[in-house]
Image (cartoon, rainbow, N blue to C red; front, top):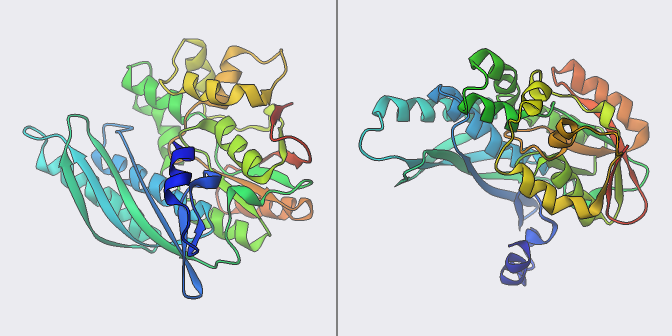
Length: 319
């Protein structure tokens, strides 16, 4: 798909970031600023309509923050079932999304709705950024350290809840993380010299890390023991809970990966688990890594330094 889009979208000199580098949003030069544009929607992650709306909006907003931008306004993308879907539930979804937009300092201008047999909701967003301080997949440099700002495991926990393999209390750690905006993490990244970033979402940690490696023409090394994991993930994974995307993510990435034979199946599951409203994966100069990690932790993020950028082929090595 990216290859097809590259051919279709090329040729306009105002495009700063297009589909070529598989970045989280497109960037368009407008005067002395850069406009950041994206759209994203998801299926429900819980039974609470308001919290679903907030998570969906937070997930979409993350694409703007991952580029080093700030959100200006959003448009609701409502794919709602027809007859029988309560108006009150629709309103709660929209209220939750509006709360997240307000917290991000963005306006809501309206939106569009279609009838869909499967409930989906998200946002189209426009943001702006300094064109000289964009964070993209292509900015990683050998010697930098890699930080991740949220724990992993939302895919398995969400699916476990849908399959009645865990209850609302078991899902709650994932909900709390998914509701955290990546706005402050993005601001801290910009103030600490980060040059490459992506949000870890549907392709899982391995897939999004490889997007940075390929766009930057570098290798990445991740220390598995440094990864933060949501409580309950390993127990559920050992019990056989997975997602429909996990296998696809593995097939997409494993040819460009290496990992120790000692990793258990549930540990491999973590690398390919699709995230919703996941954290930012940041490439930061080594001399700034400690200060950035301290600032992230002080601001309430469950962040960790998880690896480094190395010279060489665009591969991902798990240590």
